[in-house]
Image (tube, one colour):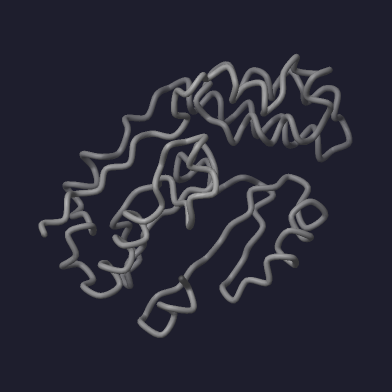
Length: 205
């Protein structure tokens, strides 16, 4: 998609949310051979500032630096559709429309529309972010065992944030330290989506 649109005033910035930095994310980035910019966020600032709860998630930002679509699930193909039931094509077509029409695109939200779509922040989410940041600090300071209870507390305070879960489980033996793992948690959902629903307007044909 980037090859298709990069000559039309379109850029992608991909951000890996990995506490382990290049040690953990580097091999995947190298294998993907991306043409676009890739960053590694060891502090999980993007997750916190944009209230992202899972990957892959995307935010649209226009030439003026204004967000015109908030964070939402952004698959580029249907390889995982059987698990999350989200088709990739409507979102990709929406991006193409935005690139072609800019702020006149029906998919680019006004400031008022954007505010209406943003989920109201909850006090416990701020506490969860603080607990997660403390856990990260302890882990990076060589206190992995001490970090676990703070990762757990972050997950308890914001249970819908799968970025908190995935990162914590990746840094230790998830079954031993958390009594679960990613696969088990997905199975427990029993089909319930772990992404907020995407809100794309219907295109008139």
